[in-house]
Image (cartoon, rainbow, N blue to C red):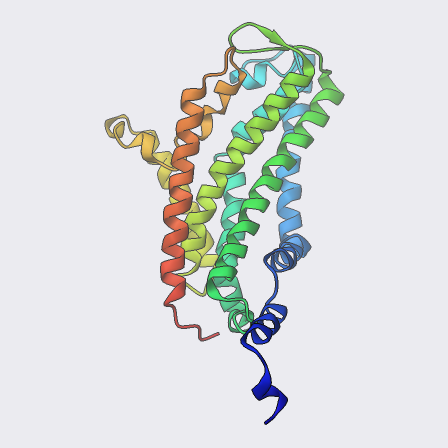
Length: 291
């Protein structure tokens, strides 16, 4: 009788677990791929440039006497922290969703296009674990992308306009530390919303082997959601759109904070994330992997 015949079930299980990569290790590898690609770093650089351009434009306009614009924009001259909020308000329509679309579209379709998807599934990683890691990476990228805009906005805003107490939209003032805390809450809130879009993107990514086509489809979903949200005759549909509650982050800068819209936004985002991740899993678990 050979040693292999004498091997106990527990020993075999331990060997399988040893060969099977841990979730954390798998996730770190995925993050190295995402943040190691020049195109993704270039995308983050573009996101970071927007708050800088906003701050410079407001600074120049305040010196020549011109002004006006949305509430976040006009508030910048009083406190530089508002640069971050203005940048987030502008980028949440196109730039940030486009960045999330590119990453989530590449999650499965990109691997299939490169011919590495079959290899990943023979590590062995397992389809469930692979999809979980891919989505976790999308969520982390959404946080990093949104945080990049916020941090650059705060830094350039404080450099050009200074800080101090922040006057909220309700007219009351809060200290700088609390103001920065509310900016962080805004960042996390929006990142959670973008993660919901990322779940939609992950599902679309399982339907094709062309990441560019998937990216376009996700961007179209984002645009369609904003378009439907602007049609008053569809007011009954607005609360259920993935993008509808993104602009509710302004409620975090009232005294007291208007939590109703924020909570509804989080619930809707969570609903989209769960439904479309499960849809992605249902599709991916039965998909024939040919590349």
